[in-house]
Length: 310
Length: 310
Image (cartoon, rainbow over all chains, first blue to last red; front, side):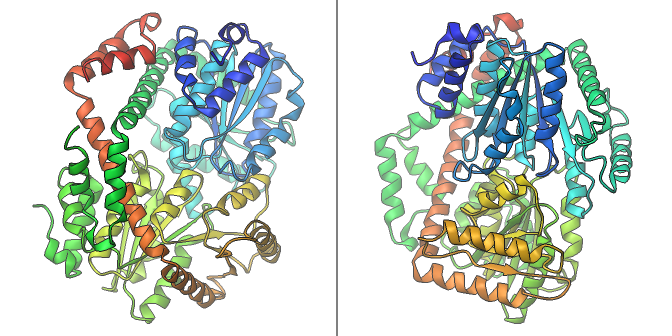
């Protein structure tokens, strides 16, 4: 057994850290860990923080941690790095920014590279969050640079999705903001001290009003500035309000079920693939691919061939 | 048969357009289309264009199309929109920007929403590119906003990956640039008329020199400005140079094989999943998920149960 389940359940740092490493390695023991954690989950509140690069997500999370710690809550951060492990750049950046919380025994911070991994965030980072959850951590934060699929993954993994944007223009960025509408529970217009913040704030609130007319929860838009220490308390209060809304509407339990479902689907996919790719089938595939380009059978024919004795 | 293979092979606009719609719908006929296209592929040169939002990718592609058309080449563009079909924002933006080429019968432009689709770009957009390829289009451009997985998908789908960046600062953006190193074949520092362009250019060239010392192909860094009409010819010449390099080193044929392999894997995954999820197994899953949260079996147990008679 490569993990210490009692240590995890008792919130021991070393046990947690080792379990997270096991998640990152994604080896055979992970199945056992998953199984051992089950039954101890569903108590943590999971918050996703996403937005374009340079929006100041880490700094904002850093301040939120401060507020949560003052209220006696423990926090687990998972910085999801969608760039490659090869670079390490973003990872280092995040770590440096939150360094001051490293000495705090009530705060856990972990960076994970998810690039290229099957299931992306909904797989690896979800497993990591389960470790925090079982360890009794109160609030789990997924932090990532969000464009496209990554955003969707964050939204699926989290109970509350906070989208951080900055005052900026450009068609594509406008479109991105619109695209974020379907996943955002709360918007923070960060760097509110910068020029154009008021305009960005009003624009965004306009889009929300227009699109979310019929929604139960209309994503609030909060102006924040880490530099000027503005809006942090309001943001935290809004997050709490959303938590209450989720709890009362039964959404928290629904989310728990939804995440289990995703986990089951991931495990099934892995197992189906590993069962399918026997050495024999690999050989058939390789033999076909080694042929001269003109003689390679079509993918459809090749698939038919591979499924013949399945 | 919901497609006109002769029309496609003869480069008929209507036939191409209908086949692309079939790819987007992703229904049962797609398998037949895939099979019919095989044997007519491998002649087009596939270029991926990626970079952060607002970098000016569409405008740059627009100018490159101009150069290619002047040289008598036909061009097919696939604008991959990683945001949702719900918004349509980015799609409209791109379309508007390239409108002037719409009347040109040698240019094909198509936007595709890939968000949430299995396989993402490597699936859907690849199928779309195969339609262009079979139709005799000379140059295929995949254009997308790139962060994380999307970039990797572009790089896998394309022979040449052009990364467009703009003069900007910020830790995360620096990290992104570094993260792009592994996929970029050519860098364009666009909006070279903006402040900081020279600095961004030198920085990037420095990173390339450092990291790519041992590489056969060191990604050239080109300064471009659509507004000032600068660097476009140089960029086009560099793309040609890369094409020659790929051809002479045998990489083009390798890429063809690699894409076939991905296609086979996608088809297998789809088939495995659809075979597995019988109505009976769906029922087992649903029944488990409807239980009170405390009584839901662990994912591992549930997977074991689902695989019992498989």
